[in-house]
Image: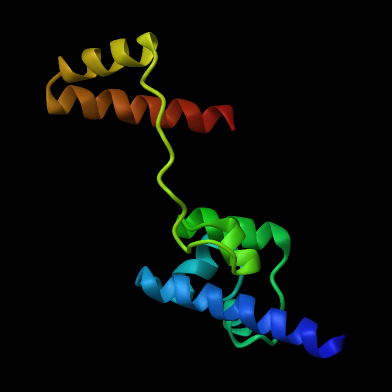
Length: 121
């Protein structure tokens, strides 16, 4: 029983490393975006420690890879492209309005939106 748990831990670690390297991502970048140390990522990749389910989910999102593949090894590393819903009428109107502005004006609007959304957090 202990051996199979260790093997699974090592396999998940190998998949984390394979995905990270396939995308040319450093352990430091991954750890910073997960809010952990690079040592923790190294321990996962070497099979010394096991990431939580939450961390596996975040890794899959950050690296844009298939969660099922990361967690179990089933399927492909890269998830099939998902269909994107067409923009709503409201979003289309916003895009048209932004396109009618100069680059300088767009930057002012984007800065305003960014600053405003920060106050909502």
